[in-house]
Image (spheres, rainbow, N blue to C red):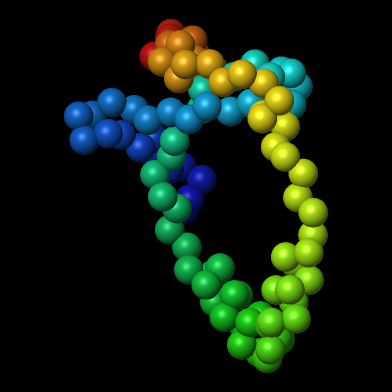
Length: 99
């Protein structure tokens, strides 16, 4: 059901893209289309089960998670290019013409 989601569009009808910095490209940005929001409710059911039945008092768990050191993102090491430049270079493998 969620595998064939359409590309999100702006109110003017243009396709929406986001910038991605894959590790294998060493800081080079690529454009990826933004998909429409997925439709699923099972995550809410699982979260309710975990926090209401498995963890009757989640406060100690939240405190332990807060202590974990999170390193800076890999993309913070590189300069961010203009989004319009990256989107203009975007080519889909199914439609080889630039967008």
